[in-house]
Each structure stands twice: as C-alpha cells, then as structure tokens.
Image (cartoon, rainbow, N blue to C red; front, side, top):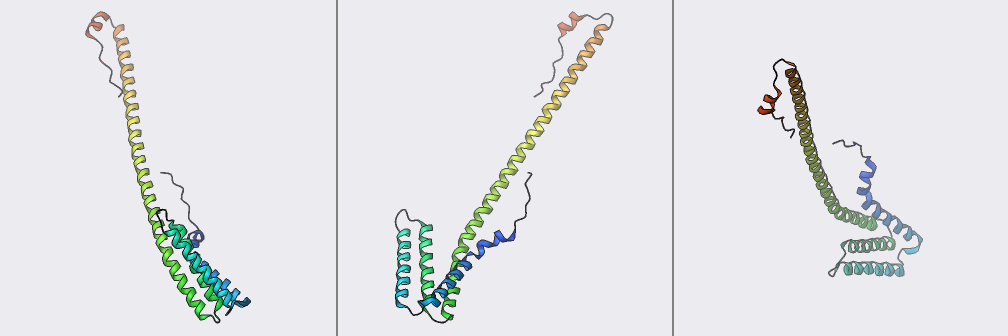
Length: 197
C-alpha cells in the first residue's frame, strides 16, 4: 500500500547488457597484445590454445552428460572453449580482418545466448511482481473488511451503551413519579439490550 517509489539509475540496468560485448572485446584485445608479443605464426602457441580449447569443450561435454549434469558448468566450459579458440586464432593470425570477423561472430553468439536468459529472468521478475501485487491487493481487501467490521462493532456497542443509559435514566425518572410500583416492572421484565455482535 505504501510503496517507496525510487527511480532506477540507467547504469545498473544496462551494465548486464554490455557484458557479452565487453567479454569478447577483452579477449580480442588480449589476443592482439599476445600477437604483438610473439604469438603471430607461433606453432607452439597455436597447439597450446587448440589443446586448451579442446580440453574446455571436453569438460563442458562431460558436465552436460549424466543424470546430474550441470548446465551452468557446461555453459561456462563451452564459453571458455570458445574464448580460447577466439584468442588462439586472433593471436596466431597476422592482420586484423579475421580476428574482427571472429569477434563479431562471437559477440553475436554471446548476445543470442544471453538473450534467452534475460527473457527467462524478465519473465520470472514479472511473474513475481504480479504475484506480490495480487497478495497486496488481497491483504488490503481483508484489511478493509476487518476495518468495516470493527467500526460496525464499535457503533453497535455505542448504540447499546446509549440505549442502556437512556433506559437507566427512564427508570430513574419513572421511579421518581408518584404511584410507581417496582414489583410490577419486575414481573413484566426489562426489555433486552441489543447484542453488540
């Protein structure tokens, strides 16, 4: 009911959207630095990166297989395999067109995979917000009903008290009149007070 309204800053909202481009750009930059420091046309460095990439892919395949396959671990291993392959090619080749082409392809694939998780996260967030709104409305409805019930009980109690006070005043005034017979009143019985419920 009394929600605090705060405006979200644009940076935290857009930072996760830039993560795939930042990651692939970082790999490309590091690979080009490695290229400038002697990895260009180095067969030993190419074999090393190929072996590391294949090992990461095998680890991803093993993590995905079996009854207790872990999709997060498998995805991380496959991403590492792709990153190592990109770094190996970008570090080995001379010139910039092939590394830039691979960077663009890797960035597009990373955004394609991330978009799926972003949609799922957004769907879960919207479902949670909808559920919380429904709960708030239900609680507010119950609160309004209980408030009305309490006000009604208070009014009935006030009316009963006013009726009892008026009856007591009437009986006192009646007792003061000449010829009043209290035994006749007891035989007839007093009127019943209203029930506060």
